[in-house]
Image 1: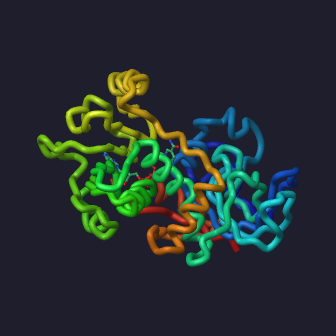
Image 2 (image 1 turned 180 degrees about the vertical axis):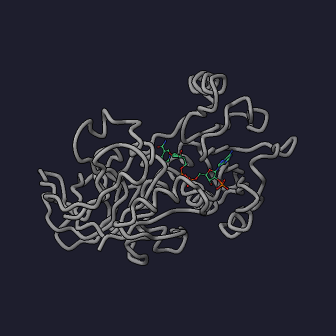
Length: 310
Ligand SMILES: NC(=O)c1ccc[n+]([C@@H]2O[C@H](COP(=O)([O-])OP(=O)(O)OC[C@H]3O[C@@H](n4cnc5c(N)ncnc54)[C@H](OP(=O)(O)O)[C@@H]3O)[C@@H](O)[C@H]2O)c1
């Protein structure tokens, strides 16, 4: 199989395209001829060596989480050879930056039939995160959610899913992405560098960017409303400490996305019903993983970067 391999941890130039043996599968797993993957911010951290105990200490490492392709071999009772599937393997060692991927049946669902492999591969991590955060945040029809960072991968999915749930959506983004935020369906768009409107309160604040601590927004939370974040704010010692203290309080939670067939199937159905669109800013071939990671780190795009695998 073909893979974008890290011979060493480091900057994006460390990716090397190699031909390696395909993974073997055990009971409950499928082997997928992977047609597309996508890059996520955590991939850049893993590439740089932040989690090397989990991603491997020595030798060739293949990272990547999102995948979409065709089942080549099945030791699962749920999926058969020839099925078109998508899903998310663990980002540290799931090895989705490759033309063949072994996946547990639990992290796979049938691919949305109405979109391309690349569009489907751009969904699992971000859409599962958004979906599970909105559910954990008890968002219901008629509620008002503030989505901080509404035009990134998680944000694009969160805006659409919140609108589908019948909520009013206020999204924050940089001024450069204002138009994109409106197109996504936000009812109100705010600059994330400006203070929130005085006296405005929300039923849920979902911080996709991991930039807020509770004291930044507590007056803007209705009674019993939650601040849900994707990661602790680590900008300086005092905010890192505040986040850690906030996370033991009942009003702030960190989402820990869990890939599962049921949620992936719900997302597939929403895509097929036209309720959830996969926005892809740019698709690179696997051979250009270096350029894809450079763009990911530059952050100068809306939504997602997909990778096609011939
Ligand atoms: N906990 C989990 O299970 C989980 C799962 C998935 C992702 N994550 C994490 O969630 C984060 C977002 O992922 P992603 O894929 O959506 O990343 P992304 O596509 O890079 O999006 C990041 C977004 O943050 C916005 N942003 C930047 N600075 C901001 C600020 N000061 N205030 C508010 N928004 C700001 C950006 O807006 P502009 O482009 O307009 O500047 C962009 O829309 C990453 O840290 C990722 O690792 C966690």
